[in-house]
Image (cartoon, rainbow, N blue to C red; front, side, top):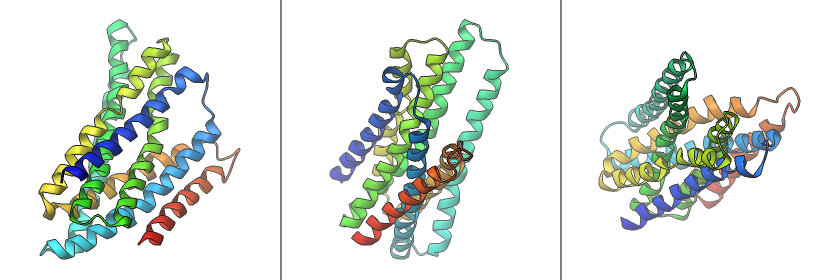
Length: 266
């Protein structure tokens, strides 16, 4: 039990570190390479979409048939929808807070409030991602096969990759508002601090409640699909007119790599 929780902690500390790397772009670069960023986002989306099935939904169905008396399709479908709705509700709360912040004038205290809201929006977004990683590693407690371990690692890598632009998404706007590079970096990396906490909680939840595992895996899959489809894919397609298939091939390649690893090891 302790081993999988420690693995979940290490993995989510890694995703936090990649968030910090993204935030560090405000220190080392005057502006980010948008083409490379789009490719990275596309690759992360492809990995997350593939992982949501082979590493989360498929094991969820198998475990539901073993542990639960309820129909596997019902448990997995409800879990998947719950994960998507949770992410959607989180995004709605953050969007409403942002609209209120944009309606006020930028006086000293109000400017600080907008900064806090910016960090909180990314932080809130990182909670289900940390849970997804924790659930994936917590599932190893019931059977640490090589393919299951690879699946958990690839989920952490996929989420880590998409954390890189999220760190930059906090630090760069702060720098544009006149904050120092150091302060912008500190605020940017702080948005990823919640992932290790959520990862450990997700792993513990799965370890101590085996019957909850199928629902939890499907929940993580729903959260990942919503993030990939609603945020990563539209974001990576911003320069579609200039480079029509560049980011799209990143999605295809990311999906293919994840599928190859999971099927080959399975």
